[in-house]
Length: 286
Image (cartoon, rainbow, N blue to C red; front, side, top):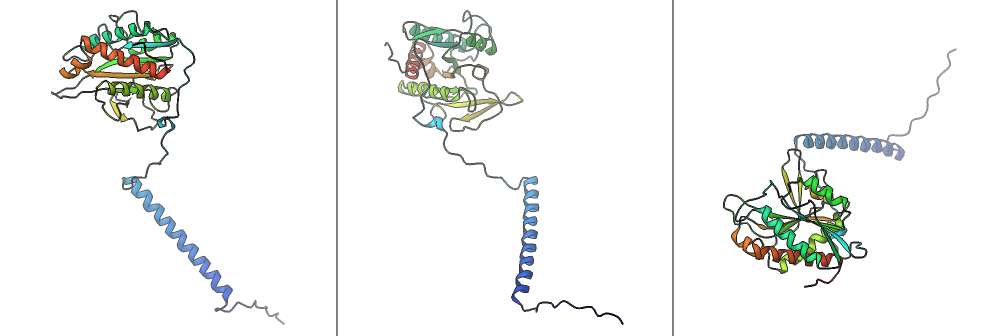
């Protein structure tokens, strides 16, 4: 005689446990399908450039607060004064030649520093008539183990532009001496503005980068993104806080009259000297 199979009693269709189970799996399935759909759509839009993913918002960097002070040690302080271009490299040419303006300004600044026992001025080559690349100049600067480096340059514009004013470039964000360099740049800009030289960019401070095609990329001072591109060689390879200053536009007669001619370079040198004193918290002799 065949044995009858005992059937397991099924829960009633309208039982509470049955509804919970079915609803649970239904919502899970719908959620999974919805998530998969959104993921595929987002991936497709990203691929074709349809979504611009928001950048990470960060707090203002610490270097913008007034609490930061560089560690300066005791005097005398070694100051490298680098005259941009020189020798067979004239730099920009306009109302005056950049090479001549930077050499005259550097010489005037060196004299001010030599008269002050708090400082020991240093150079980046044997004479201003010597041709030396930025890499060679910064190498000589590093060998002297300086406390600060200032590279003096002149700006220029083309096409009849009446561009004018002062701007300077500290070591870029993410590099070893960035915060100290930015601190010095602020001192330079403040002294230049007090002297009547209008500031370009954001408070007279900017960053420069070079891409793989050796093209310049300009960034304002509040752009603290750490980038892989390098900046000016004299800044990139400096082993101390460093700033490159664009003193005035050699193509602008009014700029040259204020900060580029024989009297102007003396005026600019005094501005640089006062900024250096402010950085090291010493009193200027003048």
